[in-house]
Image 1 (tube, rainbow, N blue to C red):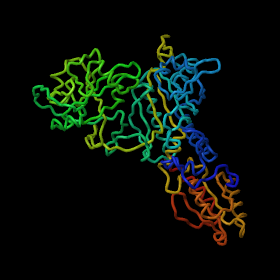
Image 2 (cartoon, rainbow, N blue to C red; image 1 turned 135 degrees about the vertical axis):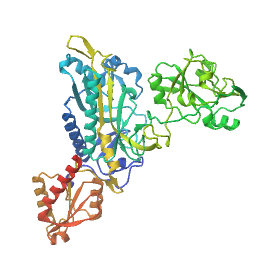
Image 3 (cartoon, rainbow, N blue to C red; image 1 turned 120 degrees about the vertical axis):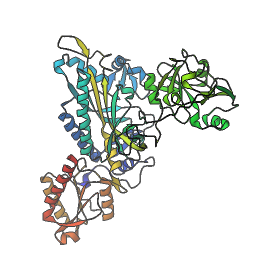
Image 4 (tube, helix red, strand yellow; image 1 turned 45 degrees about the horizontal axis):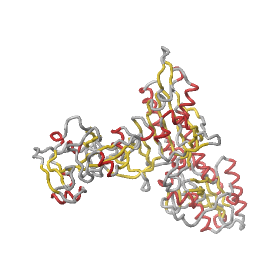
Length: 578
């Protein structure tokens, strides 16, 4: 490709709203252009990268027996009503009515669509296991798109779905896909991707993993042990907390006028926050049920853990009026003398494992000292479990070492869905005896555009991206300096033609720009190998060669260049494959 014909200009200044390297460089380098908030067009350079990412994904999905399909972006609402998600998913699902007033939606994921497809084609255990995948546009009506391609509204995703006769078969296949994902990210050139345990969220299922590209701009918190044997996201991470029991002291009601927060009460009574119990009220977004979470004052409630334990779709903070209707006093609420028929009480293990805590008295301006869970709460009135958010430095559950926090971009996820979708949607198979059973499902996603952005975040310098050979828009950039002098254009044209005939992907800068401008563009394009022909080098029968990742250059004889470049390309690709 000659740069004189290439669509997409390089831009000197970064966009005002760009705060991440990938957002800045993908705009400045002419890879993407914004159309609306969270919606982008791909220019030719960006499209070439995306095509290569998709080719690697296809190869690895085919290698684990995947069959490619293509399902619609626009779906009838009735499919999502069958699964129960049409009402439970919030405003991020874009709903509309067609000209016949039929409720429709733009798919943000395709579980319902694939179940509808498979149940029409598969009926017997003899046809299972089965995996289908697609590379398709999705739409998620994000409230706050950010960071270029990292959080968008319209995006391309590889989503795959497997169908099995039982859980054991799903688990075996799940491990195969997990290994395939590790190969994909290695081949894409992501040099630091962690597979971590995660919360299944609205997707459902009991087991799931996220693949996190570690980088400072990531919006997800990754929690690991120092040796990374333990890895989890913040939503499900646990720690080896140890709580010490003391002899219980008599319950004592104390006057705490105007003291409502943990900090106020602790300071007023001369105790530490860890010697208090914190009451936090939530309402389930689906049922409206009131939930009273009781946790020690030095911890924070992990809302994902709480929602999973409470088995609700989502949570929101309860307002004061809802708290009063349950017979509680905001700011002074207490687990004591509360009616479990009016509010669900969920107690964190930090409270159950501690002694002599300060808690509310359910009376304005009063608290109790010396609350002891086992003594003061009636058996069966509440549920005890882990609903605490892990803190940096808490002991690792595997090693006991202090847990570490880092940031990551979620570039993929896999779920063991079980029968969450197949059962309500009657996606059944007949066993050997002709009896129907719901198919057991797995789900496996990769964000394609987000993967491109994550590569930039992990592989760039102050000048632009440094593309891995496997997904670089071109393998070699050929720059002709002063092309109208001393036969430079003729030599560059000849080398360009020779490389193209050899199957090397070459971007030829034939524009005749000044060296500084040309090299600035080349840095923004990030092509792995660069060859510069100028009157000075040509006088010696040589060209200047360098890699994008290194500022050092060397002079190479023109006759030796094709073999050198082909060898460098093969070595770089082989390194990514291994």
